[in-house]
Length: 403
Image (cartoon, rainbow, N blue to C red; front, side, top):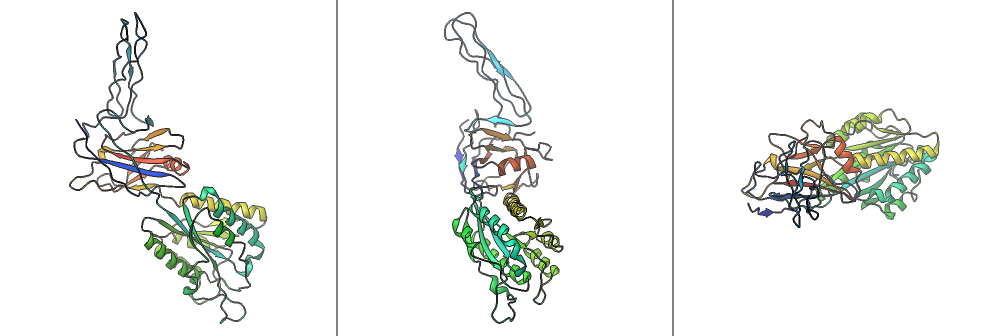
């Protein structure tokens, strides 16, 4: 039967460092039972009795897990017929052609836009950072200018802000002083934000006003999120000490402030040295535990800091995809959804559905009865995150391949 395609461009949630996300919806007229599966037979053998026979037609495909065979095509002269190929069996990962199509059921993929990842970076420059500044600042410059950071945006704010009204060089305790970053949200890699790092040196501030600094940064991050509703916005707090000075500036208050927005804006914490209270802040901020950077060897400090930033860069990207609504008047059929990954080389791999992620390279619905999102299993997630230049396609209209 003829299929009428309806294509919807959409911005979905799983993209990372050049990874493109795309999808297509197919209009009514292709039910789960009618949709053709993805298995394809191999070509037939050489015909007998005359000239070389043409390749046999592949075995008629059957839904995932099945196999079949068929008779090959006739020879171009009086030769005999060739034996048809055996259809591939279902389960596991199946290779698809680039078009993502199969006989009797067609889906068209449309490249979507990247979902931005935006990191509001808050860096401690109190007096105690003096000996640690060179390796830390060098690592930050490397991260901000690294081509592997493409697809991420970052802002940069230093704290404390020195306040002339405070004697003895104390940093201000006013959250409003930390609303505006030194460098606003900038697409990476960027020489602008990278060059701003060495222009700042640790000051003589005797306090570490973490609570007001985080409070102001949260407001800025909320403004960024409001202006970019499709973006994943997170805060990266790097400090070498527990909160110090300012009324109400404690580990508990900082953790509580991070917890207020953790569901929408997680807070990653980097401890420059073993800072006891930072795990509490990270846990409340929704990121588990603080990353601790060695401070004994400057070279190790730099490498550790780079490693931490790279880890945050990877973990900040979610491994789930919003399922877009079908066209008006239609309903989503969860049995007609497939996901495949196209590597930068052009090789296409079908990711099978695996409800319990037994197939580490598969995917599942967030709610099988009423799905709204597609969740990648750990292996598939890692493949997609590390697949610079690849594309994740979600196709609607053909029977789901199940592991």
